[in-house]
Picture 1 (cartoon, rainbow, N blue to C red):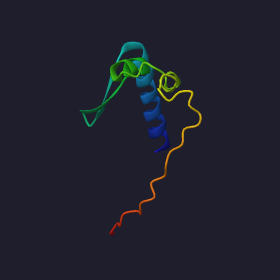
Picture 2 (cartoon, rainbow, N blue to C red):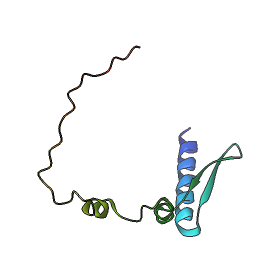
Picture 3 (cartoon, helix red, strand yellow):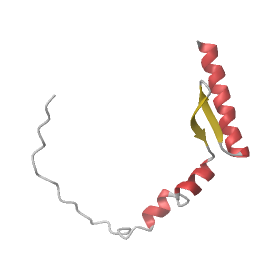
Length: 82
């Protein structure tokens, strides 16, 4: 099983590299499409995530407000039946 796992990792690694260079790569299981590997650039463009997390946080209306306090919800936890 070790060789099969190494081969699978190598094939997947090649698919990831190919996605970065040539575009989306279809992943199939038993001949059926189950996933697509895309480059980070394409994913960010399609999902609207072109802005970095740091830039997003800096653009927040709360940026620069260091003294923000959040009030804790003191209600009792709900009952859960198992």
